[in-house]
Length: 203
Image (cartoon, rainbow, N blue to C red; front, side, top):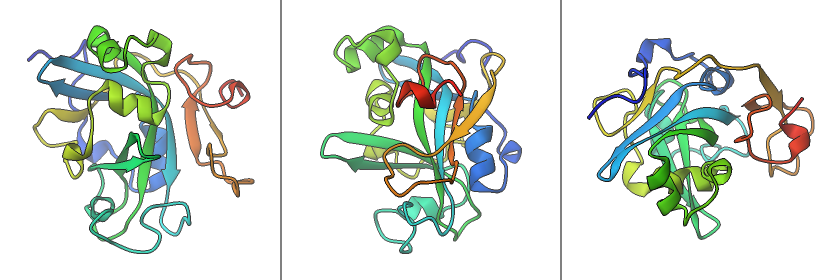
């Protein structure tokens, strides 16, 4: 199967060694799923970091059967089910044995848009992958992909940028009520695929 556009697999050695640095680094990179129906890909335009010691992180209370992927070392796909309806896609972000991750909140669709629209029941292109649950549904990523190494040869992987990345800004994370001054959300300013309140997408 051909690589999407000019995207190539992202070398693991390019990954930063800390969670928040990785959350910023992933903006503009490409998430690729070589699905049975065809190539699905999108530019990462919004992330949230959940570093070690973060009470909002799934790894906060230690390793369990559910969250063990977060402890595998950087670059593994951690998928969990939430709200009774949606899968969420994350990337483990610290050295092996330390639980932490980066939530992928939104993509800018690149390839397989017609397939994504079928997966999302004909949603508009803007809304296909604007939000973590929509992202997973559009790219057909579910619990089967939990633990996948995104830097190993396979059908789900991280790639280099498809084009130049715009200005990156930060804000508080979305949906965490006790978040006050910790800016752990990263996004490409002005990108229409960024999720959340408009006020948190333009600054």
